[in-house]
Image (cartoon, rainbow, N blue to C red; front, side, top):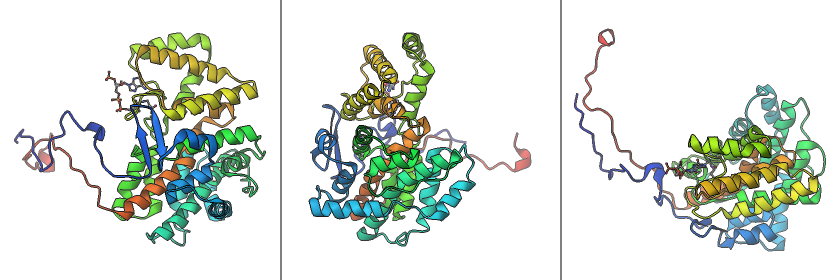
Length: 386
Ligand SMILES: CC(C)(COP(=O)(O)OP(=O)(O)OC[C@H]1O[C@@H](n2cnc3c(N)ncnc32)[C@H](O)[C@@H]1OP(=O)(O)O)[C@@H](O)C(=O)NCCC(=O)NCCS
């Protein structure tokens, strides 16, 4: 056996490129992260302007079509969203067969896989067909999640309410109550903020899958599986678990000292691209405070403020999108395991935009690996192996 490290025709990545850090793997005109200055743009528009003035539906149109729709275009687009919120009864039947403990992200992944078989355009990769599939999928994500939440609690799913916007309708289908305007707008802004984010891991997964010329539903299934992880979208749930574990203001100091001593990663902090605080956190902080004050429940927001101070005094780590979304959603009464699915309800807009972009100028995404294993290992017959 030789201990020679085999080389391929790729440049060695030892010491560099781990996790593809700093590697430009695609060109995109969808979103730009200015990590040094803590800025984010969708199609050239500043996220702060979109969070101030737009809605999730309008932002989705911006991501898909490249510019803001005029009033007539927007009305037509919004109506298509409303018309496609219902999900096939067979999908509800599938949910009824799933163990109640199945994770909501697992259910979402299963629903997207299953609903592909009902979509008339499933195997058609033309832009028109992909836009139609994207509308159906994006419109039905809230219905999948809300239906699952009710089914697992022994309740019957609630039909979508055509008079409500995307965010408000989700909360309505979850609880059976029309949310107040402030709560609905807070979730709408959160959805705007999560809709796209450069070549993050789940978007990259969607682009890799589309680059093989697989279909849009398969790309979205890949993306959902990738978003679920605790280093990515799953971090918002981890933030809430940390807050609940700490439990009270008095215990923060001790908890943080232990976490720093054991070099534990604190969910909601750190980012591959941002060196300054994430601009989305600015909004989520504001919303978490506002919703908390209106509900008379500021505990989780106040604890978050103290934790942030402790983390940033300890080390210069940027606060990221997942930190304040946790206290915001929890204060709104949303169960912790639905936080990452809410991220998906929004990010599907960006994933699908990236799928169109990948198809429009496709080349198979196929990097190389640096082989570091043994060479020329002799084959030992099974009975001679130790
Ligand atoms: C987001 C994340 C995965 C980025 O990872 P990355 O670019 O590979 O950065 P690294 O994990 O290599 O971190 C670089 C350094 O910062 C530290 N660091 C990064 N995030 C940290 C965190 N949340 N808490 C404590 N230390 C952290 C690492 O320990 C490492 O320290 P070292 O240089 O002393 O070894 C990482 O910051 C993280 O795990 N954050 C927590 C999970 C999270 O909030 N994810 C959502 C991201 S939007």
